[in-house]
Length: 192
Image 1 (cartoon, one colour):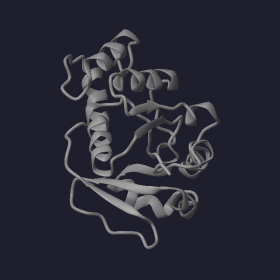
Image 2 (image 1 turned 180 degrees about the vertical axis):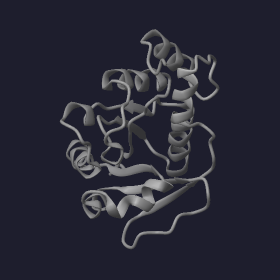
Image 3 (image 1 turned 90 degrees about the horizontal axis):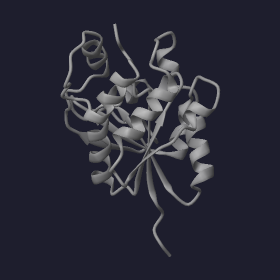
Image 4 (image 1 turned 90 degrees about the vertical axis):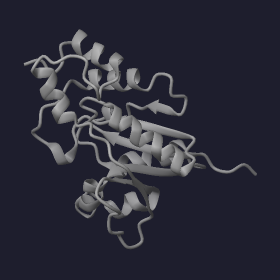
């Protein structure tokens, strides 16, 4: 019998997707021998309500452009195809239906891991996935009965700083894939 596929779910606004996101996905793939990392741009994060972001179609296209050439990376519009907000447990339920024989993981930052008990139905999410937690400042505290894999490292990319640099008219930004920056400029995203 073949071993189950190992699929990591990587949700977020990706506003914009940057090289830090790709580096985290690559490290997770290597650490846990993942078959696939599934990028799931969301309409609206429940934690960022009231914060304007680039249009969903543009963010989805930026992810598509960013992962070209990565055979283990897939973009999925599930969270964009339903009314906001995007609840992670609902996404995990859908992925469990789609991939019933797979082992599912959820990639998140340490800040999200610390806030996870306040998410909607975190216990349900924890039943469906194992968490891959990226932390810059040491291993985070475990949550009882939730499986967590610690992913160490740092990456200086910041979507907030990238948006500000684009608004300021800077070019050749070091933490954006050139193809993503080209798309942003073509569609005049984040312009002042």
